[in-house]
Length: 257
Image (cartoon, rainbow, N blue to C red):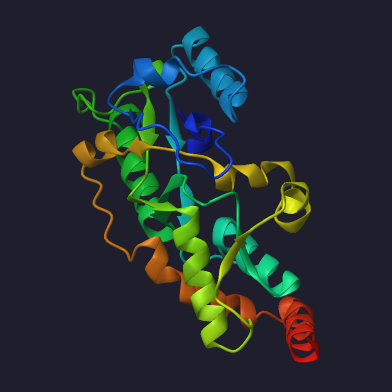
């Protein structure tokens, strides 16, 4: 068996921060997911997994599609959210909080703890049916699908780019780091260098999904939402010695202006 991690960027609309469509992808509708254009983000790798499973019936593959992940991880590496963290670091470096375009587009989110729960739940159920110690009479839930039907979204809620940036600005202003909490838009030609390269545009995309299949299997996300977790990530970044130069730069720029 194989659990492949993709992402909801595969269903995203490149609207550059503007309001997107109301089209919603549910993991209970694999046909709609399978109609996604081959040139969408992640899709080329997803197709490799699906085609390999079709060619080899012994390969029981599933594809997990996390949205933007938030919360502080408990592992040894990369413990903070790239989505929120990149916006915080850009604000520290540039002395202002920004968003992509008007910030109207929305993306789904999932707390890292709830995401881990989803993987454990899925792995346990797959092993119970397809694992080496599975009982001969084990029957999978009708919602435990594999191959071309084996998509699992892990979205728990949705938020706009503007809402996220406004919260970051509010917190950094309250802490005396920014002169103003007002959110402005990144100049288009500075987005990639300010955030995380060509993939930065995903923060201006619209992405609508529902984790209905996992819910049928018993997944119950219960951690705080993305907005409520932003302050702990701000604090984590401010306490990270790697960011001291950014913080000092922001203070100096603020005091000299």
